[in-house]
View 1 (cartoon, rainbow, N blue to C red):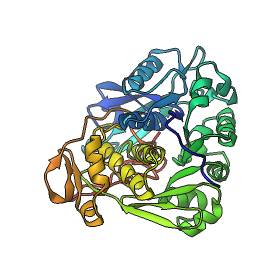
View 2: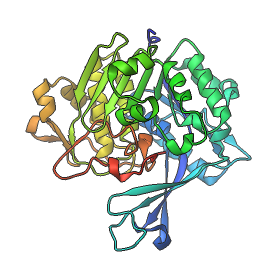
View 3: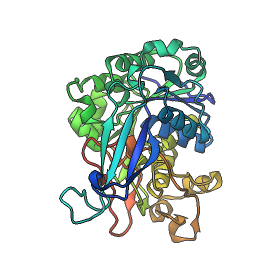
View 4: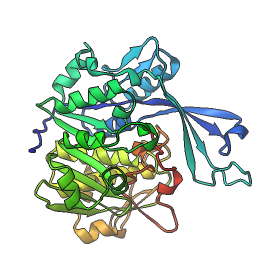
Length: 391
């Protein structure tokens, strides 16, 4: 399949975002004295990062007529994302999850320092009621009609049968570029046919998936085998944990870019950020290698921030990093103090993050965090979220 032509039109990201409660201090939930309120969602994370990169972005979803929904819509809009297509459901609540983090304390239920677990309360949420009729909603329809890119993930079709039908309808609609980030969530797909994901991926133009996700869902992470299973997309982007990302063309041609070495603060949101960087490069018509590098750069920004949403480096620095030769790119490191080009002076581009507690859905979960090799003894962060973690 030849990818539909991308344009300067807005990118539309569709999917559920939820309110998040973070216990304080860290440790077992039963010892929490208070909860800090935040929000998160894989697709809204991608929309926020696209907007930070200068790509006009909209997020479409449903939220409850409650304070949780009003707050998360307000916060996502504050990142420059168009939220005019978000529908308020008067009968169903905004989804909610609790992010439990370990403190490393001597307690039988402590997860361990730096580890996290997510507890979801999303069944029957407003977003789970999304369906194909959303495409004709007076607020959402103009956004879909103007979109140069529609971004979907494997989370949405697992929320309900109507959500699955919505995703299938969007993938079958011609005239725009459609990307699909696998975002494998075993718990959400329990009792559902995971092979449906193969059909959905094969109907997209751009497919992003982690090597571990590919092995679990498709039975292989070998590029040629993946191309036989998914022959139609214009490109498959295979994220090999913290080592590299590879674009697989329809004829089997491979383009690979190594991940940057990153001082990881928190792994949440890195996969969503990688998707935003890669898609921004696609919409701008960058060469394949530059698209992968831009994905690595945005993932690194998320990895060096607390929360899901890091601040990408300034445009001038991005251009400089994308133009590095292979040795210069390999020597570049990223820390909380900025980007160190080939061992030279740091150039700051980091920011305090905010957002969902996992990602790929945010990506300490399967499929992430692509875009980072870890400095020193720091962990990649993948072990910090249990299998099926993320949003």
